[in-house]
Image (cartoon, rainbow, N blue to C red; front, top):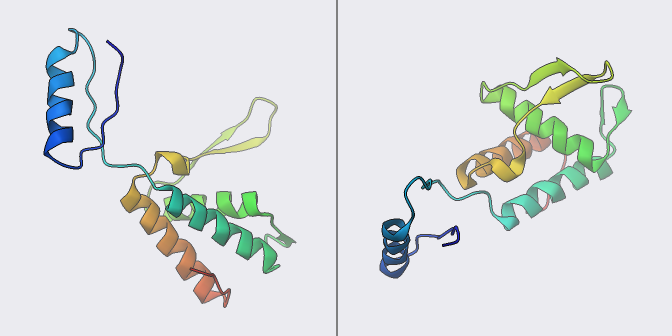
Length: 130
């Protein structure tokens, strides 16, 4: 038997999930979880990061690229949600920020992150396309 991931969207998929569960060997693990962020949410977030980078707003005295804005928004959102990133000294003495990645966020969390980035941009007069 191989592992499986099933999106529950009706009676047929629920029945399929129950069937797999009943046939699973002893010791296998079952995880039921909220759906992860969508491709549309991810695309919107990256588009926002790109627009902020192109707006030429500076942070910490310099302009930031798309990846840097991604990291800054994600870190700021974690702080607002009272889940601040862990700061460590890295393997070569550098500072490292450990924070959850967007691919691990639920759709609800990603929606909240998008609201955070939109509000941040609005407060600074940066227009973001929907």
